[in-house]
Length: 119
Image 1 (cartoon, one colour):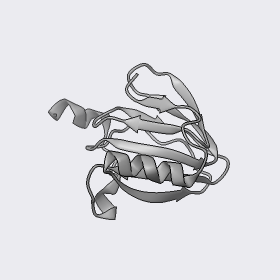
Image 2 (tube, one colour):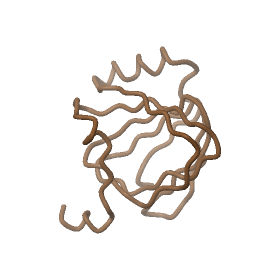
Image 3 (tube, rainbow, N blue to C red):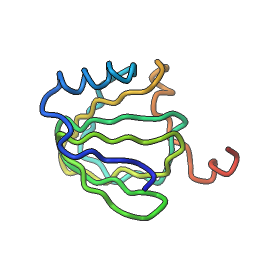
Image 4 (spheres, rainbow, N blue to C red):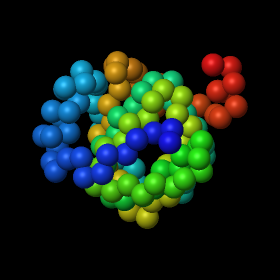
């Protein structure tokens, strides 16, 4: 699998922040309204995501497997892991952490699958 899901990894926000501090990562909070599924993409940095509220699925771009995720789950996407987030019918809240601080317009820039060949 291109990414890892740790089910029921945390019970509260303080545990999330402790985990982020232990990795020495930089957090931010993302709130998304109900939305359609995203296209396959990848990021140029490792990404740790913590589902605070809501449920959806994530598609593994390598295997085609859909993995259900819900509040309390942690996801780890290695750099260049091909994936797509699923549609949501409810608001989702994530705490997302990266290994370095980045400008927001570059924070989670989605790269197209065909850009992987140039890496």
